[in-house]
Each structure stands twice: as structure tokens, then as C-alpha cells.
Image 1 (cartoon, one colour):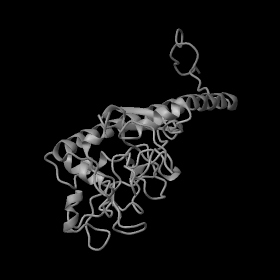
Image 2 (cartoon, rainbow, N blue to C red):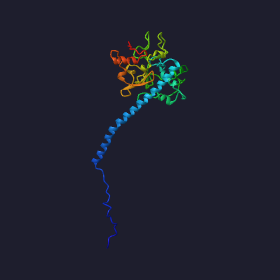
Image 3 (tube, rainbow, N blue to C red):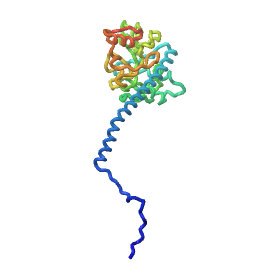
Image 4 (cartoon, rainbow, N blue to C red):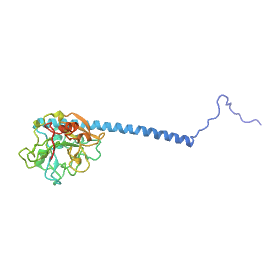
Length: 291
């Protein structure tokens, strides 16, 4: 009996065979992927940090424009905070709300976009600034409208709400109490006024060289309070170290410059670098010491 007809396989080659990876080959592939990730992840992370630093500088630029607007309208710098005592609910920041209102163009005070300008994307410890309303001591009254608050708005209490950016209140020298002139851009507002103007906003004309006067920078938002102001002599209030070990700094003329934290807090006048940095903190562009 003849076998059934079988088609000719001439020219078709050998039948296809499935090839499986060996264990060693799989391990090589996995190792190669792990190596590529090890190489790429730091690059991606570095790129992300660089983008955040650029975004932060853009935020400070907008804050600087608002500062210029505020000064042109009032003739004064906004001051740092309303001071009612350490640990008091009525001790709250005023410079962010005053500048927020100065940058308000066709936007409501509670605009999320406007508040995001005051948040550095690299500062993981800072709180988002949210427009909240309520009653009681943590919330603004009608009398606080001069500080830029809406009645009933949550106050930016210096002991409870961490912030990304901070204001040069005292400079590198005296805080203005007693007979000494304040050397920064104005600290406590409505503190009992003294003969040198302590407790009052600083006149814009007091800043001798706006391009050489620190105004606002990244803060050290570590939950310790008073991170709405920067101070080169008090560690909890140092400028931040969120960008490459340093901070973006906005000067009074609104230009932005990066400094390492170590350089920003070196205000020792016995060294050339310390003396030069000391001057950048003070409104008269002179070297000052604090007792």
C-alpha cells in the first residue's frame, strides 16, 4: 500500500524550532538592564533637580516683580512679620500676603496658581500655601487687611506653617532695637515703635545698592518656626540648602543668583569673602556686627 501523498519540502529548509533562553543568558539581560538603570537614574534625577532649580528661580523672579510693584506704590519694603510675642497665634508673616496682593492681576486672592509661586518644588518640608477661612486667633480680622489678609483668612503663623521662601529681616547686623538702626529690610511690624523706627516698615530709600542687597531666598523649612525670614547668624533661620547645597537668592533689583549655604552664612568681616558677603545682607552696603 502506498503511503499518503506528502508535499515536497525541497527548498523550505528545516522545520522551525523554538529557542529558549538559558539561565545564564537571562541573568546577563537582567544585569544589563540593572546597569543601564544605575547609569540613567542619576542623570534623570539630576535633570529633575536642575528643572526644579529653574522653576524656583522663576518663582523668585515673580516675587521680585511684586516687590518692585509694592515699593513703587508705598515707598516702603513690606516688613517681615506682625509680632505679638513668641508662640503667640497673632505672630504671623506679612511679606507674602502684601506681595501676593501686589502681584494680583485679574486673579482672586485665593488663586492656587498665585500661591504656588511661593512654593519651591525642591523644598519637601514646606507646606503648601492654601487659602483657608475660619474664626478665632489663627484667622485674620478686619484690622489685618493692611497686612494683605482677607478677613477670616488663615494667618501665616510663623510657628505653625512652614514656608519655602524667606525675607531678609535683620541683615547681618543689629535688629534695630534700642539705638541701633536695623540693617535688613524690616523685621517686626507694630512692635512698640522706637525712635529709630523699629517696629515700622523700612523706607525704600534706605537701600543704598539694590543690586547688592539680599531680599528673599530659599528658606530652611525644618519645622522650627520663623522660616519666613533668613538670618546668616542663626542656624534655624539660615538660607536653605535645597539646590546643590545652597539657595536661590533674589536681590532687591530682582536679579536671581545662586549661592552655597556656606558662602551665605559666612559674614565674618575678618576675611575678604566674609566681609563681602556681610555687605550683601545690609541695606547700607556696609559691614556690621551683631552683639
